[in-house]
Every structure is written in structure tokens, then in C-alpha cells.
Amino acid sequence: MTLLDGKAGESYKVKELMTDEDVMRRLEVLGINEDTNVKILNRKRNGSMIIKVRGSRLAIGRNIAACIEVREGE
Image (cartoon, rainbow, N blue to C red):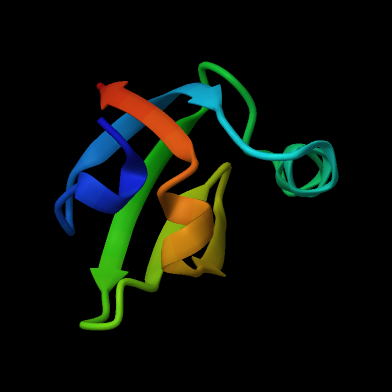
């Protein structure tokens, strides 16, 4: 499942980043790597979402959220 399919208030663990090299490097700099815990704080109708990663809140668009493969987290 992708992060785009996740529900607000739930925590997930990143399994894989499935995007081009530039976006992948940017996500890794922001702290979104494999086995990182991600919590979805809020979802907008257009698909954008606010997530919490390593204590920081980030806003990502639906295109990037669709490229982050996740599994149920702790």
C-alpha cells in the first residue's frame, strides 16, 4: 500500500521509495528512508497530507505520497 492510501491518525513504516533519483534524494534528506516511522496527521481533499517524520511535520503532495510504499507500523 502507498502512503496515499493511508488514514489520518495512523502510523506506518516506510517500505520503499518508488520515484526518480532526485525526488528520492530529497525525501531521504528530509528523513524519509526505509524503515522510518511516519504518522499521517491530516489529509486534504486534493490528496495532499501533513505527516510527522522523526519529530518534524512535513506537507507532501499526492504525487509524492503515491510513490512512498508503506506497511502498518507500530
